[in-house]
Amino acid sequence: MVSTPIYLQIIIGFILFAAIFVTLERQRPVRRQRIFRRGWITDVKYFVLGCLAGQFSGAASMALIVFVRHIAGLEHYSQIASQQPGWLQFLEILLLFDFLGYAFHRAMHKIPWLWRFHRIHHSSQEMDWLVNVRVHPVDKILSDCVQLIPTLCLGFSTLPLLAFTILLGVQGFLNHSNLRANYGPLRWIVVSPQFHHWHHSNDLKSYDKNFAPHLVLFDLLFGTARLPSSDAMPASYGLTDDVPEGFFSQLIHPFR
Image (cartoon, rainbow, N blue to C red; front, side, top):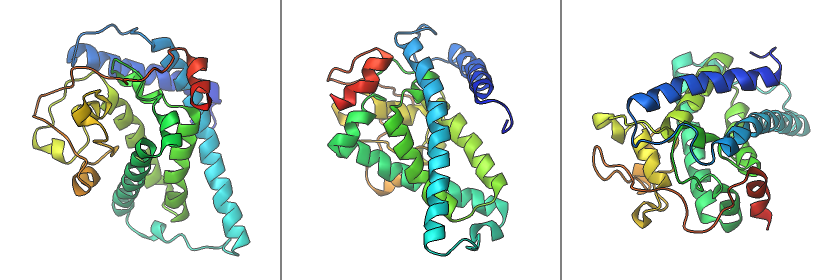
């Protein structure tokens, strides 16, 4: 895929994720809703923009790391993490990414100027796999850099990073999907669609809950986990304040 033009990567990625998650959502939906629900076209545009923004944030993170190493005289900095077994590297990447993701996600809800961008992600009143990509580019780039820079600085090997990148993509779409999936006791360990749907609920009791992207661990440690019962799902989603529906209107909305 590295040598494939970016526009083909976007098309192939969209078709692949759509084939998987639309099929799953039709088999075991949380609620019956149209595939082409309200805001679907807007989110397709976010899918394209998110792929481009991800390319930018990855390149920017690497450029910053190279620059800092050069200034500090650390061009031959030892790749500490790569000396470990691959499975251990994967677990370390998962824990580090999850902690950084939890901390920055929580900051986006608490710091007003960050919330102006992040609330675009919470504006959808229906949940499905494609809501995962409704992310303002400023939100996307900042989140990526906060998680990528510390992780890449440690010098993990390519294979564990690739394995985690696949997990990151799949679980992001899965957690937003309109899929009823019962994880049983594992729901208190692994972030599930149920866990993340409560994060998007407009129920006041769910505000500022369930921030972690992969593991429930940090929400449990810091007292922000909420799972009412094994099969309970939110009655409704979205925000109480107004966010415009159009793609370009949403892009400029945080600056108004």
